[in-house]
Length: 229
Ligand code: ADE
Image (tube, rainbow, N blue to C red):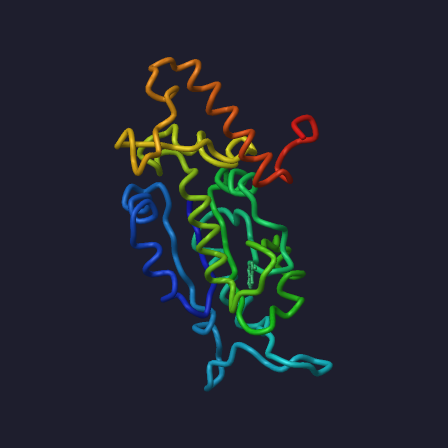
């Protein structure tokens, strides 16, 4: 997969992309991630990327011209356009199913905004999808883009050492994950459940499934399909 990010703050991405799974996935050629600085596509002396809103009001709005020039440059860097996604609190809520859907693409172009928002013609002209990572307002789309990248890249084949681990975890089946235990067997009077020491794999699987259901019912009943409620 190739991921291009259009941003005013490319340096914000450096550290998250340089560690652990994301770094390894890039080293192994599973994903390549490239940044484009929208400010590099300004033509005026002050490298202006934002301006006051028509009609008045607080804050500044990201101008369409440098963004489009940046996008058209980036678009040509690979043969396919892939999915074009703007990170914005107005977007579709980002969930595991969306991460799985995006993980099937061979290219993503992510657009991280700043200021009060994007000029509306950016969304209209690029025919971009909009994604929100939650119902709160961040200072910009960069952290949201990183969250999306982290969730998608770990689903790419080979990104996690152990192929099973992405299938087994929370939300993979729409449920929360079962509890995990490792050594020691007793810690501060808390014992590892006996069944996990039994070696009976069928019973362990049934217990884990039951735990997943109970935890989901208790902590996230909104995730359960009607039949389980
Ligand atoms: N930009 C600002 N807030 C955001 C959010 N919650 N999700 C995605 N992009 C954003």
